[in-house]
Image 1 (tube, rainbow, N blue to C red):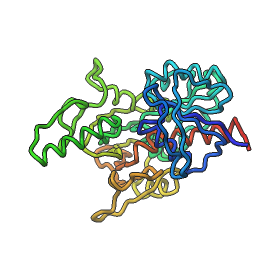
Image 2 (image 1 turned 45 degrees about the vertical axis):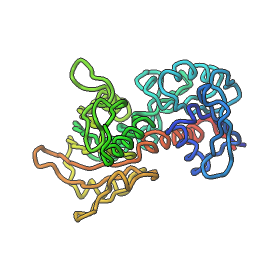
Image 3 (image 1 turned 120 degrees about the horizontal axis):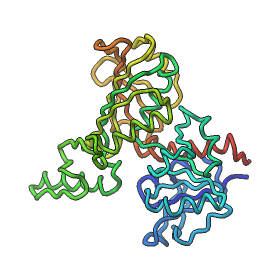
Length: 341
């Protein structure tokens, strides 16, 4: 006997990726429902590459009673309305939006990092999925923290336009086309031209000069990994369609060498170490697309601080940064609590 699973926001980039990953990983689902806004009602979506077509239902009148798990990829607005309804109906919500991440009664989970925290889901019947840039970073940090105790992290991100949804991907494509054919470049989704450019601005600005995306990386890392770690982030949008990259400077309480760190990362869950000190001996975002792993490259010692390392981290933000992590949470929930079949 398997689970009855709902994907809310199934027509978006992340929702479709959730369906792909559920199918790829052969998640034990006896029934899958796809739900979206009224304008998508009646459309059909393929369940992975199975050939099985699912008809989109209207979230406004969907009854969550009798369903086991709801994967939400609908954004904070719709989630605020429908996630509490699903949870109250007995359906466990795994939410990809930022709405519940810092709620003290909602666990914020990366299964390779803090699986035990999922046990607190019963307070609200809701589990939060972290920000895409946070998720891949804490996967890389966790085994190193266990080995030598991280005290401070300085991270600069290079985030793809898919993190801004289909509109972001469309804008990069249209601007690139316009430049090549000599048309006027139109800027609508981002604050400046993204084609052949980088923008040091993701989400809204806060009073202290940081952006909300940078704030998310700080507070989410503390909640997931360790509240004592000091974190500072600079988040940058780059003209890449899929795949987030991060340059991470890490300070430790205890001594750790680059070689020791490589040995630890090589064996760590969810990580693929590709670190050859030669041309091409590292992973770039285009190479991680479609993969489950968080890739780490260019591990080296930081000579400017005591007990410091620097590394390069790359992951498919639509997968580990969103859809894959949500499905992994569902798998963890099943193993620890729901247990069917």
